[in-house]
Length: 408
Image 1: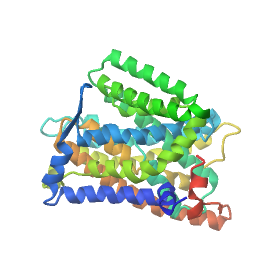
Image 2: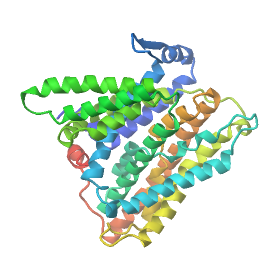
Image 3: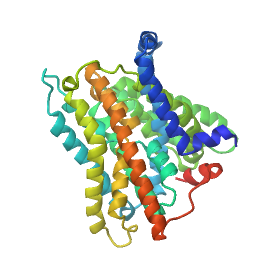
Image 4: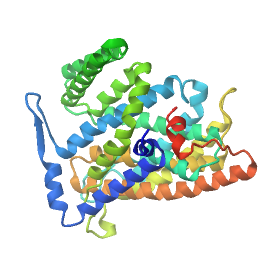
């Protein structure tokens, strides 16, 4: 395997690449290069005969990013059937903690942002934004600062992030559907079923033909969902969830470097391409402050508090209890919203460019604050576990990253 492939499959490098792409997008948006790049991102590209006519930026967020959600769905399928969430006993603790990591940020956001700004522009619709957790960044922080953490803590963090992904996907599907066309949606579901059937025939000499048919059917499903009024990434999620497990694992393995090296950095660049508002702090939207506080603070409070409750009611046979300081570290990691939070910000404030841009900036700043706090807390907990003698030295070396991390 090439050095590049190993880097793109690692936990650390994709997170750094994602951060660099977002930083570059924010920088170029605030330089004289802004108008030229904005002209490209706003240019429309239509697919003849389909009714699909999207700007370049929307092709990235609705089309290219669908590949990321497809891979996320393959990961979800594994965890729900063969991984950390394959039983109620295994899922109950991270599920309760994840609930806190969703409910508390929502409450904190609404408390700060309120129903409207002084000008009457509603910002309450931004409440889903601080509920997401970015798995890539969470694993990146764990890989860099968490060497020595017990496997129970790592499994809890992974399950927590995956549950957050599930909730984010549900929010996108339920809250941001518009002008629903049930006929097209039904046809899209039929295409998903055909995709599932084809995936179970991926064997023998017919494999290349079946694979090509699956790609075609997958694109048709994506187009039908997009035209139906449901956000197109939901089609990708459904395709990933119904894919045959024997085909899903190698597919995720093959797509992972492309998602980490191209899809996510491209989306991060486009999403972060916003002009920093030249207004006094007091004139910033309440949505800005709501997100800025709810991501790093709401996640820590919610995950730690609900996680502590979960430890007291965990059923017999459940995974080992997680110490409260470890729950604080998990909460800080949960505050790194980034990818899904950026998408939610774009969707929640699609009709108000000014508030949308401020929400995006808040996601970037809030996620950075959470990242710094998480790095400190994870380092502290890893050191504490090493001192207690319960640390584990099975973290992957750089060359073994794919084998160990990707088994999830």
